[in-house]
Length: 309
Image 1: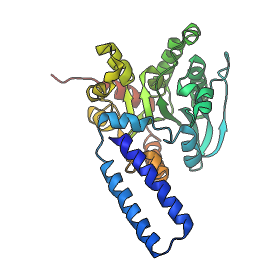
Image 2 (image 1 turned 90 degrees about the vertical axis):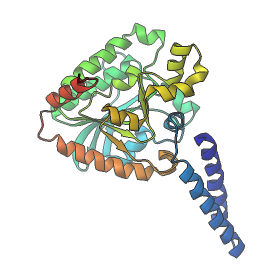
Image 3 (image 1 turned 120 degrees about the vertical axis):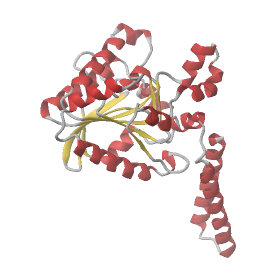
């Protein structure tokens, strides 16, 4: 349903923009008001979303990427490249920045807006070099006492043979181990699609924030359906079973806070999301200023999945 509504809203946006440029007379003004009312009615319908709708929104090509968040939330970002082992992995963007005047380390999965950009960053699927670059940046942050902020948006770690040959699983495992013991605060934000170990490699955090229409799961719905039913076309059914939406994960304790999105998704009004995420990040970094963050992080993940009999 959300896919059809999104296309209709895009058409209305184009018609509204065209009328606004024409400086229409009274009849045109009436038409413009009607189009705007129609748009608001469609946006209201977008507030009712199935898990499959949320997966579609999480993957929307116009959804804000890590580059957008860095530009909107941070100042003086300085990108750091390479893993000091093999090569640069463009699917991970990381570096040093100022957040309200304080230095932080920012790391995130990078996706593109079109085919050419996605080819450059491997559709947001890191190889071992990307995870080793992330680990290098986190260790540097610990050395200089900088909090770490990660942005999670990936369909998973790159599954190619060459990635496995270069130590994909080992690189992810090292990230998990190192993040669990970092002595600086770590705040992770699931902004889009967070799947599999590729997402978790940036997700061992003191606080995990999640956008309202983001998803976070052990693998993609298509992969889940392929394993369970040998039929990837049943991915919509898988979405219902996986518990991958923000409200479900908040209830289960897998994430700590859900960041609201505007009606129709984050791509409709990115500034709405930026303002709320900025407030949440400031609060979380202040909360962990005088806390044993390594101990808190350890206890947080130990509690996950615990059952009281």
